[in-house]
Amino acid sequence: MAEPAAAAAAAAGAPLLEARVSRAGLAFALLLAASSAVVAAGALMGVIADDAGDVARLALAAAAAVSAALFGLWAAACARGRLTVYEWGLERSTLRGTVALPFDEIATIVLPALAQAHIDPLGRAVVHGKAGQRAPMGLLDHATTMKAMRMVLQRALPRLGREAHDALAAGTALQFGPLSVTRAGLLHAGTLLAWKQIDRASFSPRGLRVFPLDRPDLIIVLPLKTPNLHVVEWLCAHPPAGAEGAAAAPGTAAGDAARAAASAGAGAATGAPIPGGTGTAPRVLGFPDEDAELGRIVTGRPRRPGGVRAGQVMLVAGVAGVLPLFVLAGDVAPAVPALSLVLAGVGVAVWINFRHFGLGIYEHGLRDRRGAALRWTDVEHVKHELVDVYVNGAYSGRRVTLSLRGRDGTSVGLAGVGDQDEGV
Image (cartoon, rainbow, N blue to C red; front, side, top):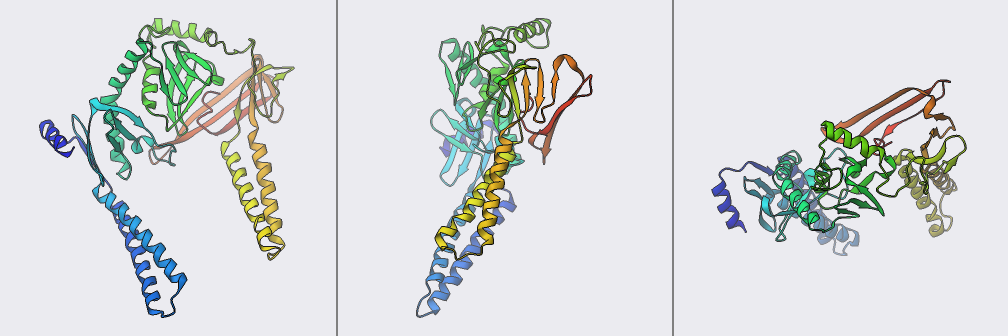
């Protein structure tokens, strides 16, 4: 496919953007390959010089040779890798060859399953074409691939959105991982969220979040690996023509009126329980479903998820320290099993503690883990701060501070970093 790409490039003129692996990245890959090759050669020479042979040196030479081969492939992929963006589309060169993908033939954009710390996942996306073409952004300079993917979204996303509108108008339900999109709205986990109930959609390190109007308990979070998340975000901002609540634009008098009506009626179209209504209360660990003073539970704010992961790590580390006892049959110092058991116990305690929610939100007020309760009608002062945290220009989380003080001096609040807190 290199010849059609070259012809198209010549017709379109000079490339708009070109991305390659940074020189530092290529040098690092070559250094690793060379180091592994030196280690393999040294170990092999030692085996040859020893007439009796040395199994350990032979194993080291084999492992180093395999590492050198893998690092060599990595270096070759870095040297060969190139992404060129033209007015007509993009061209991606890898060890497998060169793929040309016009913007009009882009079918799917897939983000990586896991977001690296301080790295925007858009710069590591994979673009798929209708004919099976595949253009990965990996191994290239991240800053340049970010610019390239913004160009891709600018040129391909409106068309993908219009195609989605046409499919919905024809009565076809679109599937985006666990989410079904229909003319009636978004169906997720058995709950239908009507178009008029959608406030906005935004990306976070966890994935795409869809926020309903005044219903934090119905926030939808789609994993990053879900194909075409940007199409879902586009549809939330541009509901299908003729869909209920889609005609009035935000920022206009009609849009504000429609928004107020949707907020007042939120939950009615889904059949889901609303504050003060009937239905099954959500399970919020650490808080009762019914509170004699505050009424029925509506939702809650989890404690730091990092605490749960820390407890799990300590538990696994503690168990891993105990298991050798059964293998070595007591050939270890008594302090080793004791420390392992203590570490495992601390891990269980931390895990259980952080599994519980830090704040329970009820119909008539809220209660924190200390037991302090505050009714909505008694709130005198509210302090709410949302601060987006960026590291090296990449979004890494949101610092949330919420403090409410009542007339009698009772204070209830929370603070932490978590993209789930905005709904609370």
